[in-house]
Image (cartoon, rainbow, N blue to C red):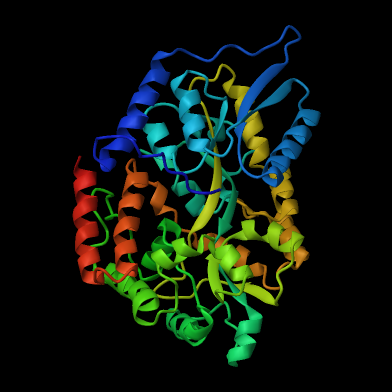
Length: 434
């Protein structure tokens, strides 16, 4: 459930053109390569190939779900295609070679894949299946994967970002713990109080990327794109407020290490949190298995992201789509439906690595009953507030990268929020006009 971007080294063309060229060439090759081979054995059992990726724990979750499905559907066999760590590149290789799995593990590639005809629309399956309830899904997780009015992917799990915080550090500085209704202003002031330059301790860590700056942007009431998706959404006072807020935290207050300092540390935000270098950082449920296996050396908890104009949050998500080249669409739908249905969602909840993508009371109760961490309900309360606009454009990957590069310069203190806004708007509009 991480954002993957294609490698851009070794090419002479401008970066902003690379992704569309890669996708266009690879997917065009796939569409001329012919259909995948039939996979029905002599006994009538159908084999559905399904891609998988992630940690061993994540894959164990998928395998357990598949085993349960096959027990209930002996006429269908699930065969796994492991994407390894470079899931985007491996998926592109399979697609371009005409070997796309029947069911594709997807991250932020739904729009380009749908536009190029690699994915099969799911609407007819959904409309023709009385046992399937699309309304049970959190609405943002459905709307994000519609392309030209058609739905191309279904989300199995979602991990909304919340704020992890070190209770011991709060106790030391004498301040109250944050609550689920805290404000952006309270967050800024708290981060500043928790910063101790002498001890190289920071109140917060801005791990720059779309899940970070996108969250600041949305909570300020701004958006990445204009309402029709054809221009930058950064040309508003609200967007400038978001940039100024990030600049204040990293440059004026020095409440967060800047990108250069983070690179020098050579550690991610979770490691710096564990080591006591930062008091707060934003992340999802995927941290919980590691924090449970190797307990942190201090008391900690989570809280919802602070409220600005909105209390919107970003999230890591996992979606599945059906290949347009599958020989067995009916069986592929049965598999997909099971993975995103109640039985599949219960297994997601049991592993406590993500939330089910549906408003499944039984599955969510399993997560609440874990009581890990104490305020685990913050994850569930955040799910309806997820905004996934960062994956809803054909050019999302290159735009997200371009914006991140400009914000890096701002966080380093080499350009102002106003200069950053101007450059982002110009770059985005150029990309979107091509």
